[in-house]
Image (cartoon, rainbow, N blue to C red):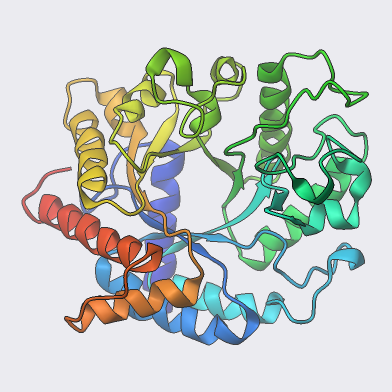
Length: 366
């Protein structure tokens, strides 16, 4: 079983790198994005991987740790209450056993705060803040950003990324990079007056180069690479703050996670035509999820074989803690209706999406 899991994970990883479908004809990526659990819930996640995720046909797990890991490379980020290397080894073992590729995530650039709480990266290194001293209690902003041009930011960040990726024995890393609204701030001594697209692209290139030098693949959300004004998508699922031209300034061997939650925009086609590999990422609405899957399938069954190979599949997002999502999924499995709210809606969307994926694959489609 262990050997079989390793082989399957290698098949999936090869598909990411080279394009095309695995040997069984299935979509290369059938994934889910989950919040990493607290230390006490690690055994529950391992069981959920072996049971629910494997049962649904998941072969890719993006696990968003953020800074919720007991880091040793940078002592200021150690946290004995968070999962450590030995805990993560249990998650790795479950994924390997079931042939699921594990991709850890830390939000880079944006999402350095939430509501009134500033995240640990800027809490431990306030000198990296793009807007130090501004927005007390984070009032009037969505989320803080770190300054991509601070001379010390990557030395710290890359140590954390490397340690987490090594603990996860991962071939890829998800850098987030979504919903970046604070960039090229006029009060930042390094970034003021600079082109937001070039700043954004520069940070993507820095992350990409660091990972590639170690033989690892960069995954990221795609919203900042879409023109929210030209497309009509708006400022959340696309960009209206000048970052969209970065799409032509970054390497093409990045996997783009193209998320849309209210409407199934046909943006996977935009990304594959730009030369990227892409996965479509829904959240709560089954019709949006099936529409996004239809876009991926249309590309994969089209006459442009190069484009078809770049449409990798789907990744369900959840945006709630692991435990609430797992509970909602098990409630659905039992035949009962989960409580209303994000966990139940995401769980239902996940089951509907993966049922549709299996139906396509069972009928020989791509």
